[in-house]
Amino acid sequence: MEPLLRGRFAPSPSGRMHLGNVFTALLAWLSVRAAGGTLVLRMEDLDPDRCREEYAQVLAEDLRWLGLDWDEGYQMGGPHGPYRQSERTELYAARFRQLEQMGLVYPCFCTRAERLAASAPHRGDGQILYSGRCRSLSPQEREELSRTRRSAWRLAVPDERVSFIDGHLGYYEEDLCRACGDFIIRRSDGVYAYQLAVVTDDGAMEINQVVRGQDLLDSTPRQILLYRLLGLPQPVFYHVPLLLAEDGRRLSKRDMDLDMGALRARYSPEQLVGKLAFLAGLSPTGEPVRPAELAADFSWSKVPERDVIVQTSMFGE
Ligand code: GLU
Picture (cartoon, rainbow, N blue to C red):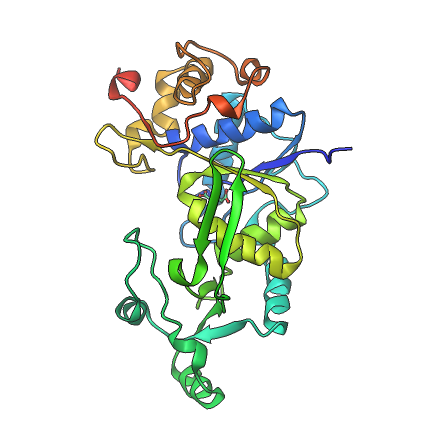
């Protein structure tokens, strides 16, 4: 028997959701509902500087308003709680220790400026390719540096290519050493990094399908490495297209006119879902529709693979 599909939506409550976030949420919801699976809502509020409980509450309310419900998670509870990452630190600490015991974790004392200066040429997407400078420090050097600086913690990455089949995009591979190098799994302020937390949580919550934006496609090989090292089963990944403004910019929380506050003031849930369905290739006309009506003939083959341009006229007054 096929195991029950368990998907999740894992937003960061760092502000109001915008059109791109709800586009991803709709696709994560449809993919699970079309297969009769279970959907988990997890709040990724790891970063105390950016995330707030008020945002999480509004986010959950916006999802309900859209008609996107969930079976387990934030405000619902369930067997794999708590469902706020800020309350799951012990679990991340245990996974961190597991990697430490394998001899794969080392302290990094580099400042951001030093990391930038020492980084090898990278792909120009803003990601720093770490040179591995602190990997070879002697115990004495570590001891000395730790007197004046707090270290971050990095995972020593093996020299190999990691590949996977994306459920939506097909084959993807990356050479970890050349794409990112040894990556941070715990920041110098003690906060566990997204890569470690997301793998710990998807593993613990028995998630077997991950639907998320293509901005995270190049994080997936790092996460697959962590699944392997931690002995956790790897989910199937579906990376959905990003929504771009007409000038080619990625829509973000800065596009206030397309955040949920502005959208709710202008449209009914059905009108907004209709427009999202049009952008997702699931409705030829974009006419008002409820999410549940889209689930019956949802298919990933209809969803575009690459970035989707949002015509301003579609969201004009
Ligand atoms: N919390 C991440 C975000 O809001 C998503 C993480 C994921 O889906 O893996 O961008």
